[in-house]
Image 1: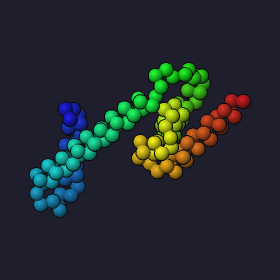
Image 2 (image 1 turned 90 degrees about the vertical axis):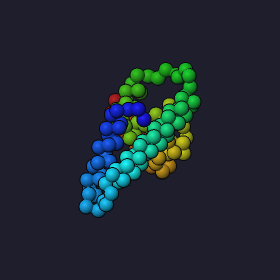
Image 3 (image 1 turned 180 degrees about the vertical axis):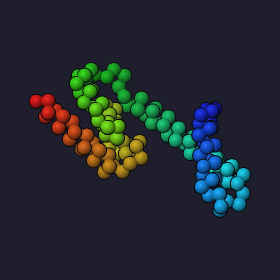
Image 4 (image 1 turned 45 degrees about the vertical axis):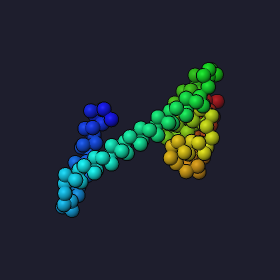
Length: 130
């Protein structure tokens, strides 16, 4: 890992979990070791997934992106993060709904709903400006 903050976070989480089960744990040292090992492994896997997703996004993003109007960029930036991410992946990174669902670890129906909600908000904002 090599990150002091991450190590501190993992150690704190391991001790917090130990304290929450203090009355039922017979071997605190072993419990801490296994818990910390699992937390490190989970963090490593999450970082691996993030690196793969980043590489995939770099592959699908065109080198020269067409210029977009600043007002459109501002509208998309006003969306909450949970709606902005699928919009950016779908319309800017040109990812399919299935690819977005896999990348975000969400069902395809949820991604479709998020895109629908984002388009509805954007449409509402456009109507307000008229």
